[in-house]
Length: 420
Image (tube, rainbow, N blue to C red):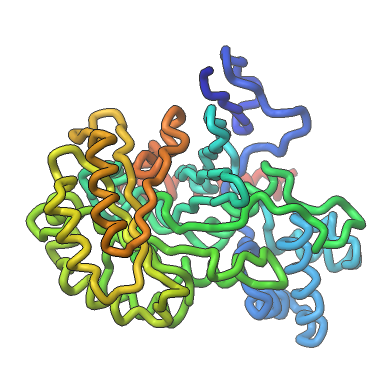
């Protein structure tokens, strides 16, 4: 059975329907275009209150309105100010004049044969990122991106072949969760108590496109909103941040975010990890593991997850497994063994299954949990290490020319409006 692809095609409603592609339902929102209004998505209640005061709403009223807007955005899933029934028409008109709560454009939604979903999302500036939802019995994990492209160039990772375009903002990170909830039908029906809603998304992992610790402040601010019990309400114990090893920010992550930590380790020797995860040349294995031992809050109840992709003939020997056990001694840890997920042009092969089982057995005998991650969404390139968008960083000269053209268009529009 082939995967199903839902092509939302919002930017071009007249696009022809292709075999195997389902057009968006009638009445779908138009494509997102550049909007001069700042977004309120991704802001805390305090930041919302400040934004409201900036447009002339009194301080006392702004705190009340901020709580109302926050509830509508993150408990009810409102997509327009007009839906906010307990806010007066005059205030809603002022909000709509100054602010946006528009979603990013869903370009495509693909559904794997195993139920995994992948969304290609277009940002207001035209760049694109991918978000993945992985359903499992008793849980559902949303894999969220933090950058367009990636700062790093890990050789086994498809995303690593796409150079960094830019960091995502808090509204773009939080917005991925909102869009997934839209698609999965998680928002409560009108007049339904919020606690009665059914949850498909139980866990969030910052494990999509990008290195989240190289976008620290924006990721932290977004996760504060995602974990707020009065809003999206995903516990910090169910939020995991995955890093390739930005050592100076690991302690800060524990202190300021307080989420679970995952380390993309993938090798037990510096020479091999230098090839697989080049940031290792700056922060080698010994420094990385020292940071893990000192991670704030680490304990047997809050273990660090070490991710280890299984590459045939590269890092999968019995000796590698025994060295992994030795390296992690004293760190409350779980080891996720990840069968390599191929992508077009990749230079590696996945370890044979009996080799993976032998590797896992050595780790298990040493007392570490070492589940082998079942590959999910391979048929739609949604599995670990397969995400990539077509966005490319504009040259400065091209960016400047585009901005000048946009400014000229705005001037002409304003001149035309004044003349009429």
